Image (cartoon, rainbow, N blue to C red; front, top):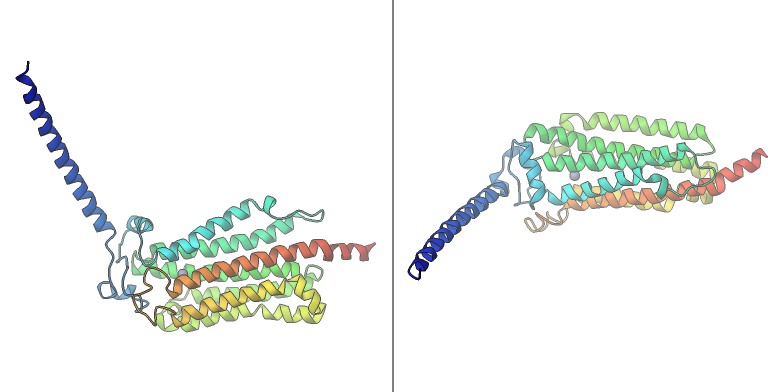
Length: 321
Ligand SMILES: [Zn+2]
């Protein structure tokens, strides 16, 4: 009995060693496959079509030709990760807000379904813009064809956001003068349609058109100045200031323009190439400023909605009495 003990012990050690070997082998294979998945490339290792910003030197996901690999790239850090998540997370938040608008939007006795529709129009516009942007950044490493298509949708999303932002606020700004609302809504839609058409043309997405693209979109945003001038003439400064919450709209414009400016001049990576590859390059700053600008618009819209229901509608009802 005593002599059998060492035999059992030797067998156990052998099994343990074999098990350890299998574990080590599997670990090695897992690490190798993970290394294969998360292999990142430098500027001079990626195909020409992927080259967009020469000041970002490393952290590239090389052309995958696989939607699955693009989705896998969501789970490791590369030079598009911040671009994806800086718009994906706010997109989900805007969608949730639109679904919960009955609890988030303060209710007045005069609140109607049209209020929810115009407020939701902005939420859905913001969601569309942000989700198209994050989808583009997730799949832009797939292939030239998918990157081109995604880039077009990315610009289309910006057009949708500007159009829906303006129309929702115009509704409250000219609440008691519907004819002016229709005129400016028509101008906004026409401008939006023109920008969308230009965005979908291949020529528009070339690197040479970068400054042109940024300028065009800023001009579209600045077309919001027209209804403001009209409002100042029609209602006076004090009323216009409160009707469209001018301070928030101005702040929104500053964030959009500043974001487009940083994107246009490629700050800060232009001055220290390679330092901001993963964190902090101009496109990421642009994304964050777009979200902050959209939040400013949200604040303007909510305050404008409250102003209309607290002051404009009661004074309209007083006139009718
Ligand atoms: Zn982007």
